[in-house]
Length: 323
Ligand code: SF4
Image (cartoon, rainbow, N blue to C red; front, side, top):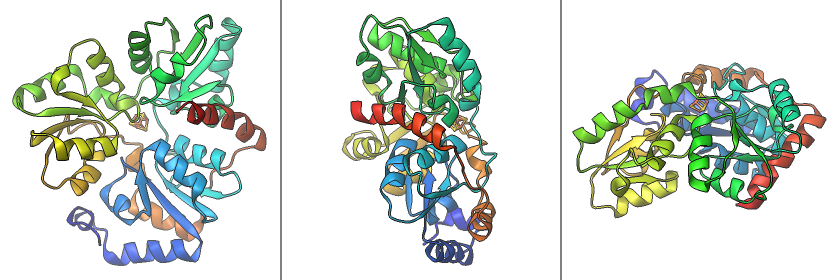
């Protein structure tokens, strides 16, 4: 059943039925990232963060994966399921953080630091992953760095806020790439302090997904956010905390698309975005008409060379093995 929000976007039951019919006809599973528009989250077979979706992509039985998210995420699905056809409704749905480092730049950086271990946020292209030793997410970056021998130099990228947070948490000096996600500009310290002051009894929940929230994690580690009412939680953890907490209002620091799922799973809670303007325009390039077109025409297929797939799989699997 489509929500009121979905219907308000001009998407109707007929669109949803046609999307599901075509998916069944083509043996396709539709995966949607938490930052997708509500109509796409509602019609998808699975909704989750990038790591959850990668795991699902590797396990599903369908021969085609339609990935509603940004391009590097669809690439990760292809790396983990190379025998499957992976489609993305718009191949131009990029990521400002992933674009902040290219494979050539990484190769040049490695040449300046021979023998260094490369740890890259999962928000990178497949070509960059192919040059990487360990992938990480915001949720496991500290654990990954702690697993690397003390005497090794570390090149960490491309998110400078996550890099600073990890340095602070581990007490370890690293070489950090100065990349960033444009969306966190909508979740700046002043906005957060204003919102906290406006809701003095509210808890603050930071979702450690994507570059848009890494600045908040850094602020928490510097003591600029109230530690007694700030929590860093994944989606399941947020839902549980909201059910257990005495608070009835929660400030959520992440891209605003996440609120759709949280409201659905926790209708009694009052959810306030840390900033309404924290919207990832790349994620929103995946629209309901493009999803339908994708199923009708096969646009756009994600293709990677076998060499890139083989090399890029290594840091992803290392990351998963450390968890
Ligand atoms: S929110 Fe930022 S890091 Fe996440 S996909 Fe969008 S641009 Fe990339």
